[in-house]
Image (tube, rainbow, N blue to C red; front, side, top):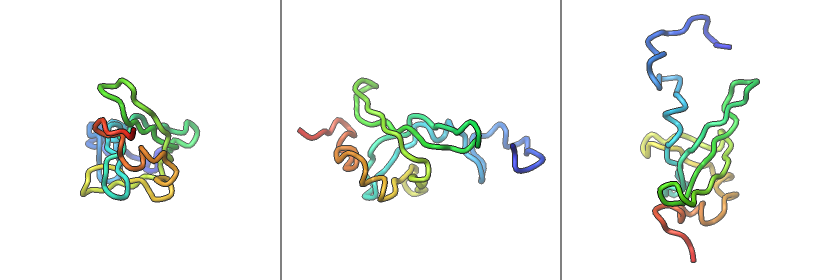
Amino acid sequence: MLEDSTVDSSAIAKSETPRLIGSSKIEGAVVYNSRGNSVGSIYEVMIDKRSGKVAYVIMTFGGFFGIGQHYHPLPWDSLEFDWRQGGYVLNAETERRLPSTVRDGLFQAGRTRH
């Protein structure tokens, strides 16, 4: 259910307003670790059918032109948007739980540990 009884029709055609953001603007957004390194991007937003709230997002990392990509679920509340970087930053707790190659951003740009 909508919180407001009326909807601003000028906001319907936009994918972002001061209070709302469309899923198409979130999908593809870069995810950063606490040091500012890119660790992946948001592949998909998962919404709880009953509450209508975002439950989690699927982060994708690694791969080359879609081949060999890896996927990892992230709780929505583990991300905070950083206006300076133009993407989402992982909170420290979630970052610690990621595999070290992801946490350190080594899957990006073809950089993997050997």
